[in-house]
Length: 228
Image 1 (cartoon, one colour):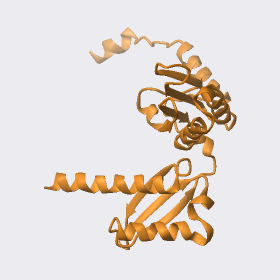
Image 2: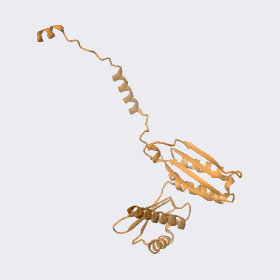
Image 3: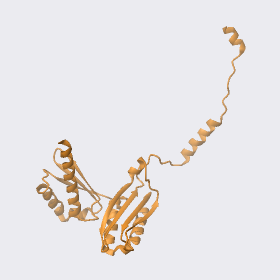
Image 4: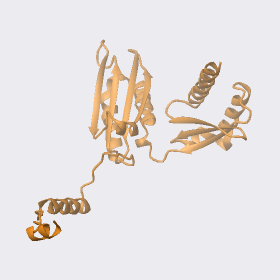
C-alpha cells in the first residue's frame, strides 16, 4: 500500500509540474520544485523571465494559485519565482529556445540556430556545451546532428554536475528533438587539477625530497661486544 501511495504522490507532482509549464508556455520555465512545509505547499518556479510569469500586478500567479487549490486540491499553495540571472548556463532554457526557433523559422535553419546558441553559451563563459538535434531536418530520413565545443564530462561522478535538458519542436516535416548539455564554470569538479605557482612549488619540493640520498649508519663492533 505504501508503494502505491508513493507512486500516486509522484504522479500528482508530475502532473502539477507539467500543468504549470504548459500554462506558462514553452521557453519561460526552467524547472519547478515543490516543497512541503507545515504552513502549506511551496512551489518554486525557476525562470529567466519573471515578469512574464508573474503578470501584471501578479494576475498570473493569483490565477495559478486558485487553479492549484481547486483542481489539484492543494491546501495552501504558495508560489515563489526564482530568477535565473545567467540563462546561458541553464540547459532547459537553451533547449526550449532552439525548439521555439525551429518552430518559428523552420527545420532548415537548424544549423544556424545550433551554432548561434553554442556560441552564446561559450561566450558567457561555460566550460563546455553540447547540442544534439534529431529528426527530419534536411531530408526525408531522420538523422541526429551534434554540435559541441569545450570540455564536457560524459562519465563518472563528475558527469553529475553537467546540466542536461531536452525539448521538442513541432515542425511541418515532423517532431524534432533537442538535447542540450552545459558544464557551468561554477561547477565543482573533484578531479580538476589547477596548475599554478603553488602547485609547481609543491612538485619541486616533492622531487627534492625523493632525490636526497638516505645515509645508513653502521653500528660499531665494540659496542656490540660490550653488550654481550
